[in-house]
Image (cartoon, rainbow, N blue to C red; front, side, top):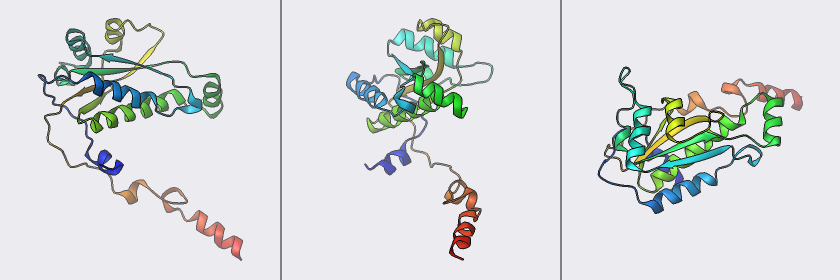
Length: 195
């Protein structure tokens, strides 16, 4: 499968086979792919916690679901959760982020999350990135210091959902070349230079 096929067929799965465990070697390859993710100034501002103990995994899943809002009730079905914790950036990334007023650590955590879900899909697994959870509960369950921020939880398992058609905006709405939404500024500049 080429890369475009991989990203075209990867989806957020919300139904997993609860009786099918994920092989350790697959998880090891997924976290290795994550470890190799790029980051601003190679800061690697993350720590991954693989939660595969069934009892602990169910407690983490409970922290991701909300009875009131009906959120994330599928997470107990997933046999593995990978929790992403933000670590400090290195000096160069920190200074660059301050100067440019950009949170490079958050960007880096998004990149590593993409590596995780794509690597899981390449291994024949489904995944879902979860941003809705009780952070203090997860912090307590996994002995994460209060000074650390838990950014995401990624549920991983063997999906039992059929492949869905992706609903995305048309390319012409989201991509332009040589200027924002084909403003024509670059063409005008080139025309002015040639006169």
